[in-house]
Amino acid sequence: MTTIAIDSLRFIPSAVEGLPGVTEVAVHPDRLELLSEGEWVVVRFLDIAQWYRLGWLYWPLARLGFRVRGFPSVADRDWFHPPAGRFFRFFSVPPVTVRMPDESPETTYGQTMFRKVQDVLAVGGYGTVDLG
Image 1 (cartoon, helix red, strand yellow):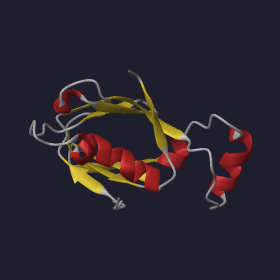
Image 2: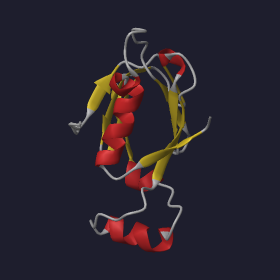
Image 3: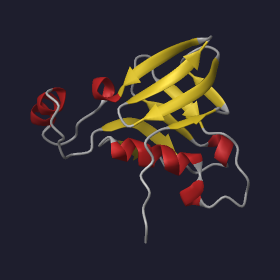
Image 4: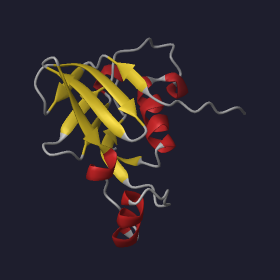
């Protein structure tokens, strides 16, 4: 089985809650970028990450540039919907919920934007928490 690492994604979400007028989203291994009312808003994952194990140790090491284990979580996710209803709720202040674009019913789960977002987050060492 061949795995292809995706470095970043850009897409038009079906909806975004938490910021006004978002028309485009870019997901990178270290940050989320949202085009809100014509201006890019950047959310750095290191600033919103929730560390579940040894966070008191991992967080400072990550800030110094070390890659650490523990996959801190940066968002809740809900996948049990049609594609346009699937979302990630990022732990930013205020929380930002990004709903995925609609996709063809023939799209396999591994090819969905929802799965690709998780793959990009994993490249940066981040994960998400399943709400369902």
